[in-house]
Length: 157
Image (tube, rainbow, N blue to C red; front, side, top):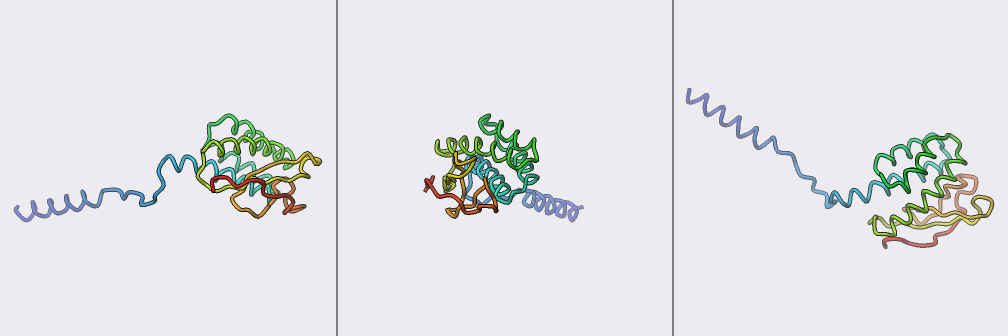
């Protein structure tokens, strides 16, 4: 009987010690993650448009809607998700990009971003977007004029 009690005690102690979940050793806080997720989702969508992949852009827009409730972002995201026409997606992306710029400028991102500009987008009206790299990869023209544009501003540097 004494042996059984000792065995059960040891099993109980092992279970108690082993049952604890490890804390994330990352320095990210929940608030930092809340800021990071929309930026990452935006960049995924931008990359899909750079690749001129309307299906991937629609999926990225749907995923983006999961991590944001900001109506400035949701409306153009719904437009992008609802169409397979890349030109229509790019028009909505322009609206999305300007709203995203306002959000990150207000301090809702800790990621270094580059505000980029293509003067030839939309029949020479011009359009902005955000990128995580300083190299221009144009989401409005894709591989037709991949590097058309310039960096206008560095954010969160």
